[in-house]
Length: 222
Image 1: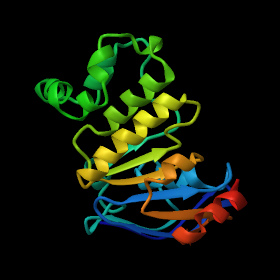
Image 2 (image 1 turned 90 degrees about the horizontal axis):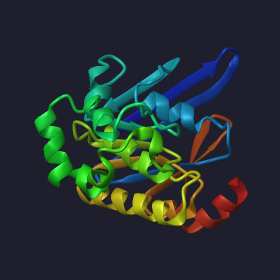
Image 3 (image 1 turned 135 degrees about the vertical axis):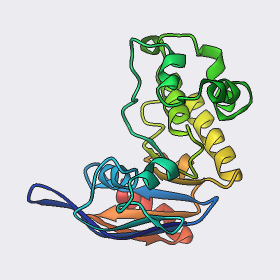
Image 4 (image 1 turned 90 degrees about the vertical axis):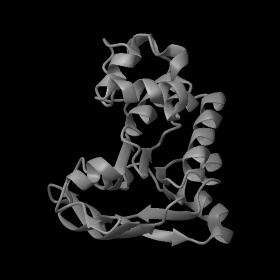
């Protein structure tokens, strides 16, 4: 379902990604670990269509996303490290920016993934008053607008308390059970337990990690 081949990217003369290749199937969780600044966030932003690579290809369900950017919009939901909320707006109004069909939004709040995320409990609150965990839940809810089959998350549990971290893992399990595909960067070993495949990023390249060697790989990485 996900086919990424030989992605390269650079900031000026500094090469960040050097021929990254990655693949994933429906219902699979793909984890990416590596030190800060190694290129993980750049890779995810490219996979979500936020940034263009210098070279390489990205295909979702056999469709070339770099040739047709609507593929990114339809196939991917992206949760960056920084929450994309407008603080002056209520949670509901923030969601309206991502759910143009108000009837669909209300349905999702009543019985869909927004309800699973617990957002109805604080949907009328101003975004500026939300806790870190609430903001992250709304960010995930925004990314799920249009029910994309691929959810891309960049350090979703960073700076959250233990309860919020467990909540996010629970939401991701449900998404995976519904045959969504998750691509996640994380420093949380507990989140890596969700991953069917794991990669380490070093010097702009991805290296697969055997399940039996994950502990050693994480110790070396961090």
